[in-house]
Amino acid sequence: MKVNIHHNRGCKVLDADKPELTAIAPCSCYKLSIFDWLEGVPDNSKSTDIIEVHFKNTRKGYYLNINKLNLRQGDIVAVEASPGHDIGIVSLTGELVMFQIKKNKINLENNEPKKVYRKAKSADIQKWLEAISLEHYTMIKTREIAENLKLNMKVGDVEYQGDNTKAIFYYIADERVDFRELIKILADEFKIKVEMKQIGARQEAGKIGGIGTCGREFCCSTWITSFVSVSTNAARDQELSLNPQKLAGQCSKLKCCLNYEHDAYIDILKGFPDSTVELVTMEGAAYFQKTDAFRGIMWYSSDRNNAVNLIPVPVERVKFIMEQNKQGIKIDKLLSEEEDTSKPNIKSEVTLDFENPIGQDSITRFDRSGKKKKKKKNRGRNRGQVNAPRATIQ
Image (spheres, rainbow, N blue to C red):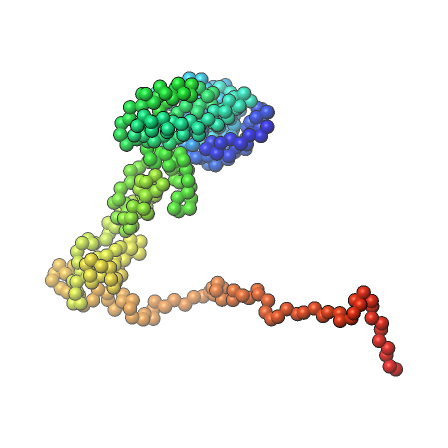
């Protein structure tokens, strides 16, 4: 019997009737997947007995292969849990596991890793799939119970343990929530051990997943493991519009990608002059409006409040005008004769040494031109008869 595993655990297909064939081809469609660039290196798989196992969404764990099982990426295994056992999929083996442990700052001396029991058997997989099928209903029911108890919290996800004896309830709350009564009701309703785990809005977005405004999957569900605070200063330094609808992600928080280029902008803007200082010329005062950091241009306008008649001024020219203004000297114009783009500049003209074929051909070049030729019809009354050959006059 072919069984599709839940999409939040990876797009795996296994044969539940043949537990010895549960080793599946590796795939990287699960959240926070890691590319094993050491795969195929000799003795890499035997360099460590610790393996990485991924569960639902972004939850991962590191386990000790104490029985020296021949495990590879994609194997379904039964691992130690408290209480009972859990079912997960091997996501990483070999030396790269130690790099991930170091990256996630996990101390193996103080936190001894749990054990890998065995490869999952047919009975383990059947119970695991039954537990997975209960997760959505449990989440909806838990939301109804929390609403009846008037608890200011939102249950975003529920994950059952592989042996169907325990479930983790992930919730979001702005304030401290007393959910002792909720735990009693859930334990009595579903006959399981309940674990409540509070997460933030960014972690919830990573668990749910989705497509961002850039057209790609959320960074929080593909590679981000530690969330750095994002402030509006990152948007200001990059001259972005402070529109909350454009700056906020699916989690209603500022997008994490605002921090990606922020350091580069900070380094570049260190060489820019103070934008609050106005430039005084013979034509009048010029006020700063915006900055093009990578091109090294500052845009000025004659109106302090409105960005009208913008003039791009190079940074070096701005510094020169400020130095002249400090000495009480007024410059004739913001731009010098060489920098004035309003006048034709012969040197700025660029001759192309190639031809651009785009747009040169007509869109209708493949359309048939002219009228279709009509087929000649046989005007004879009886089309089934063949006309006799004409007699030739000799």
